[in-house]
Length: 287
Image (tube, rainbow, N blue to C red; front, side, top):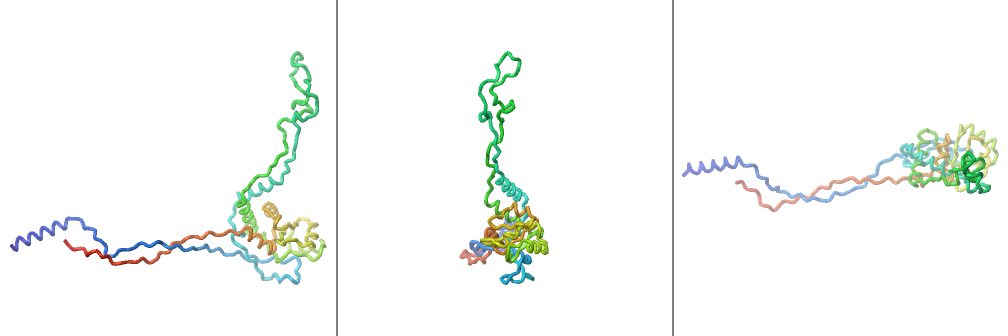
C-alpha cells in the first residue's frame, strides 16, 4: 500500500512539472484613477534695453542714466520671418499705387466711323475706320484702365509682421527707447544739433502720445534724414525702411497692448497615488 501511494505521488509531481505555470490572480486590485492635468506656462524672460538719453531733459523727466526699459518678449523677441516681412511690405506698397493710368479704346477716340477706302481693288491692305489701333491717332488695344492694385492680407499676418520688424531692429541694436519725445520750442537749429550729438541721424521717431508735442513737430520737420510719426501712422514698411527706430514709453505700451501674444498653456500630466484594496478572492491553492 505504501509503495502504491509513493508511486502515485511521484507520477502526479512529474505530470505537474511538465504543465505550463498557471496565471495566478493578484492579491491586490489596483483601481485606475483619472490623470489630473496641471497648467504650466513656458518661461519667457523679459527683454531689457537701456534707455536712450532724451532730446530735452525737463523737470518731468527722471535721469536716464542706469535706467532700463523692460520689454515684452512676445513682441520684441519674435523669431525672424523674412517671408512675412516680404508679404507685409508688398501689401503696403500695393496700397500706395494710384492705379489712375487710363487709355482710350477705339470706341473712345474722336473721329469718323466711315470706312477709309474700299475693300478691294486698290492693292492695299483692307482698313476700316480711322480709330483702328493699327493707325496713327487710333485707339489703344488692351491699354491700361483705372484699377485698384491693393491686395488683402489677414490681420494676424500684419500683426506678426510688426512683431518681426520690431524684433529685427532690436536684434540689430537699432532700436531705442526714450522716456518721452519732447522739445520746448520750435527752433530747428538747436534740435538738429542735439540729434547730431546723440548720433540719431537717419532715425524714425515714433510717439505714443495722443497728440504729438507741437514744438517737436514743428522743429523736426525741417531736419533732413529724420522723421516723426505717431503709433497710428506706424507701419512695417516705415520701420524697415529707416536705419534706426526710437520709441517713447507710451509707444512701447501701445505696441505691447496691441501686439502682445498670449502664450498657450501646456497641460502636463500629474500622476496621483492610486488606491489599492485587498481582494476578497480566496488564496490560490497548490494542486
